[in-house]
Structure formats: C-alpha cells, structure tokens
Image 1 (cartoon, helix red, strand yellow):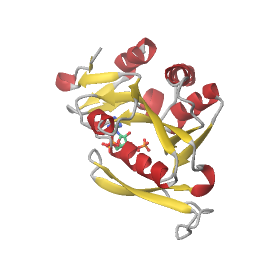
Image 2 (tube, protein in one colour):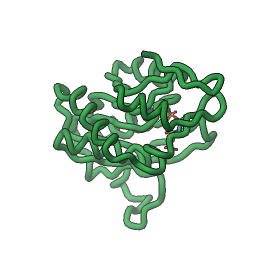
Image 3 (spheres, helix red, strand yellow):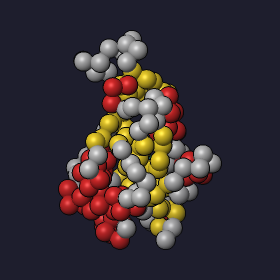
Image 4 (cartoon, protein in one colour):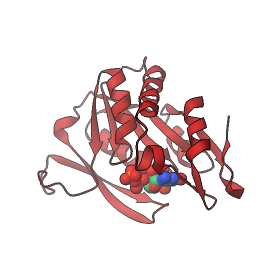
Length: 193
Ligand code: G4P
C-alpha cells in the first residue's frame, strides 16, 4: 500500500536493527485519513471471506481494526490485557491466553468475554505490527477456544525479517500485510516489495 509505505518512510524512526517507531501515526498519535485508507484496503482484501467480526488486541490494534470494521459493516472486539473494573477475572465468562513478547521480554495474559464472540463467528484478526507472531498466536488460541474460526489476519506493518508470518502460515491462515519490511539495518527502512 503506497500511501502507508510513504508514511513509514516519511515518519518512521529506526531504533537499533529491529524496531520501527511509528508514534506519529499509529502507536501514539493516529493519522485518521491514513487509518481510513488502511480500513478500506483491509475491507477490499477480505471482501470474499464472509467476515462476521474483527478481533484485535489493545491498544494499538484498535484504530486499524475500527477502520476496517466500519468499511466491512461488522463489530470489533479488542482482547484486553489490563484488568477491567467491570469484568471479573475469575468469572467463567472470560477466556484467557498467555502472550510472550520477545520485543518486551514479558508475558501478559489476554482475555475476551464469551459474550462477544459466538461459536460460528468467522473472525478477521487485525493488528498493528507482526513481529514474532506471539500476539496473533494468543488471539488465535482465544478465538478457537470460543468455538469461532479465524478466517484471516490483517497486519499494518509486517517485519518480514522476523518469524511471525511463517508461524501463522504454518497454520494455513491467510495473512495480508499492508507493508512488509525486509530490513531496518544501518538505520534504513527497506521494504520487501
Ligand atoms: P509479536 O506479537 O509479533 O510476537 O510481537 P512482539 O511480542 O515482539 O511485540 C510486542 C509489542 O511490541 C506489540 O505491541 C507490538 O505491536 C510491538 N512491536 C513489535 N515490534 C515493533 C516495532 O518494530 N515497532 C513498534 N512500534 N512496535 C513493535 P503491544 O505491547 O501490544 O503494544 P500496544 O499495542 O499497546 O502499542
């Protein structure tokens, strides 16, 4: 997606050899016209997949997921990482999964309420970054435990030099990334195509 790639080149800041800082349009401030374009692109890519709901992980996945959901006419469920005042952690209403982040070297517990995803739902997962695929792995496990199907995964920025895509493709899931970064070495952003 050219608009997105140009924004990454214009505003992305490379940190070390592995991390791309995109706080100015995705991870802190949100570029609303860009997110709307991202939503349209996801809607086009998954238009034949009979998506009934979009699932993402708080917090940075919510903006692209919302934009896609608006285009596709479905609702979004964001898996939570933080304690909620209104959701009882011990309740059988909630389904949990553990997500280990290689980037942050922490394990977090993510959860979704059974009320919002029904057996038979055909889910599109959307997330901001695909690095090692751990977040998507956790979401897939939650969705399957809820009796629903993962029909596809939409990613805004894929770091193709990390193992996320191959981990997801091993499960025969359709993965669409709107930008694919081949390398961040030497302070240079290089795309795969
Ligand atoms: P993985 O899910 O693909 O295995 O990724 P990983 O655990 O390595 O990433 C953990 C967190 O770091 C995620 O955000 C992910 O979006 C983010 N991340 C990974 N690589 C990059 C990068 O190069 N640049 C930026 N900006 N973020 C990266 P999170 O903890 O869920 O945070 P948030 O959604 O609350 O922002």
